Picture (cartoon, each protein chain N blue to C red):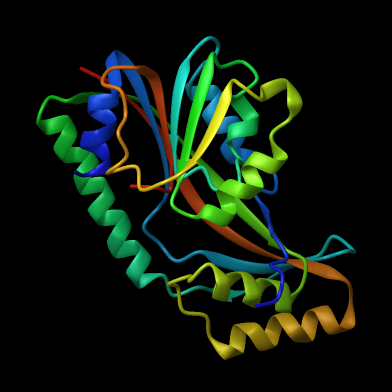
Length: 102
Length: 135
């Protein structure tokens, strides 16, 4: 399989602007389902208290881990799993983000 | 367990669910030339995806009706996916198991335009972002 040439998703930043308009992530404990390679994670993670980002695709999660800036390590955790069966602490999160994931 | 039920269990009361999803309609495709000219070349037949979107909206309606969440705000926006070439676009669609159907005519239009002038392919999806508050 040839290497995937990634498109520029949300090329003009409209989705990121919409997300920031709707939610203030400051100090929030965030669960992100369907995080992919962390495309949206990076637009809010620096202000969140912590982030658990989940995606089914192991290669995407590996990419996301590789791309995690040093400043966010320890605050952002990427997990390759099916969120519907993953054990999650009850009532632990203040924001849940689902981008094209329902 | 449905993902929305999982989210309900995981959020504390007053927590916010933020969902984004495309509108239930076919995405449009255009070629954006380096000169700035934008040429619409067709749409993707997203019938299967549209069906999934209706199902997702029904699920959101269900968790609201059941009293697990109440709707707060929503905004609409256009989600743009920009592909560097026809080959990159087709490879991405293949590797991501894209369900939408793309006609040979649309692909041929893109190839013709990009063979004459540099540019990119843009797939445009009207989308919606909404927040629900966990009760």
